[in-house]
Amino acid sequence: MKQLLNFLLIVVTLSAACKKGGSGGTDQPAPPTPTPPATNVGLPAGAKDGVAFVNNGTSAIVTLFAPGKKSVSVIGEFNDWKTTSNAMKNTSDGKYWFVQVDNLDPNKEYAYQFLVDGTLKVADPYCEKVLDPQNDKYISATTYPNLKPYPTGKTTGIVSVMQANQPKYSWKNNSFVRPAKNNLVIYELLVRDFTADHNYASTLAKLPYLKSLGINAIELMPVNEFEGNSSWGYNPSFYFAPDKYYGTKVALQNFIDECHGNGIAVVLDMVLNHSFGQSPMVQLYFDGSKPTADSPWFNVDPKHPFNVGYDFNHDSPATKYFTKNVIKFWMQQYKIDGFRFDLAKGFTQHFSTDDGEFRSYDTDRIAIWKDYHNFIKSIDNNNFYTILELFADKTEEQVYANEGMMMWNNLNYNMNEATMGYVPTSDFSSGMYQTHDFPKSENLVTYGESHDEERLNYKNIAYGNASVSSSYSIKGNLPTSLKREEMAAAFLFAIPGPKMIWQFGELGYDVSIDYNGRTGEKPIHPEYYNDSNRKALYDAYSKFIKLKENNVIFTAPNPTFSLSNGIKYIKLSDATNTVVVVGNFDVVSQTANVDFGSSGTWTDAVGSSVNLSSTTYKSKLAPGEYHIFSKVALK
Image (cartoon, rainbow, N blue to C red):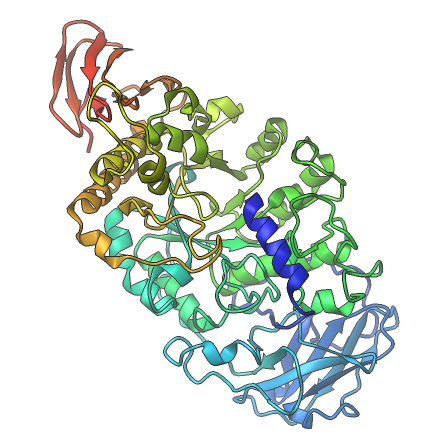
């Protein structure tokens, strides 16, 4: 992620200050409400952060948390943007500002902003929709029908939108049961680069493709409002508003509902380490180059070397309160099944200048994450997934695992060395939960590719190894490189615990991550599916995923393994079966010598059965050859 973060830091430095707005709500029984950062004296009954509609939607109590400001007014279409109308009152503790706006049409959308101290115009941090004067014109009517036009000539900057009678989605699949953590196969997906139309409807049309693959969870890269339109989404600005470039709120809810109807959980990538310059929370306390010392939410300077944008202070009561409101909102309004928290290691106030110091055991960070995880469980304790992109000290990760949280586990470098045939650096045994001293395999989300890593097959074709004694070569050879991917996938899905694959890895996507810039748009290549070699890889992925999901042996504890040499194997055993996955990752033939534990007939899920006269399997394997042997045939 470091390269991405450096790239985004350049974006922040070069961008003009502050452009692009969320209004929470719930249609479910309310869980414990996060404690506000101070006692709010004088807020009217029914008020909440953002907008609370009263009088059947004909009035709205509009609230802004902005301690220390001298004056705040709400301006918008309901008062023709007059700065002298709707001056807001300040609570006696000086922290909240509020006003009631009357004579509203409940069915109408109203654009509005806050005018702070007579000069600064900002959108509502809690609104569920924003209008952007620069970027909305590039959003198609197919993706976002009847998008409200920006109030050109009336104001400047990002504006919020409020509406009492918003279109309401009727959920159909209310009895979805989330897959067990140990059985998760997550498909990481960037809506922008998954289909040509880059929206929820076109992504939904590909659901049969994903269901046939066998995955049981989708992890959406960030979908809340981010700067611009074309982005990975790690430059967030509004946390309650889904980014319009992908579609409407209802379209996103429908996507999640349909996933549930097809047995697929939805995990949301959430970015709360930092926010970017068009965030009203940044703008409210900003000196032109960085947050000011009186910001309730942000550090003046980042506390760690990987920060981009502006660094949230998660020791601040205001930040804790805001974060919990964000968490609650997405869990309730969108019925998501989990969060993947980006740059979770950054949730600390301990200053560090290098990764060694940054990743060291941090009691402050542990306290913060325990608090957030406990809040999540207070809302939904039914197998909800809390996934951290942490990469911290092993003893610290063990604390989170013992609390039921899940860690991202990156095998990209070593697994790619294996697929390229470079044996000395090909040990991917860190995929095994025992090497992390975790109590269970379910706490480690292991992957060979993610959005943040180079594509395995790109490096296979560009840099793959070759034999000096035969014609076997990986470099420049698509069929061979794809077979190497297949062998790696057989091992990946045999490792106990949840797994993740990056979109189109199942087809051997081989466009570099740096094509068109690291975070730039990538070609989709729909023709891949019709290529026989790539389709064979897709079919192999599907087979391995279904073997994992249909056979409890792949959750067996304490597997034995040898993953550092050319011949690699994983052995899993339970009371009813034993499975041994064995393969040759070298570029020359090697002899496998593996203790299977018993003699007799062993079935091969990808080839022919073998009959062992002893407990030892001894066979010469060609480069790239692999087998999935079992004592009892797998389903």
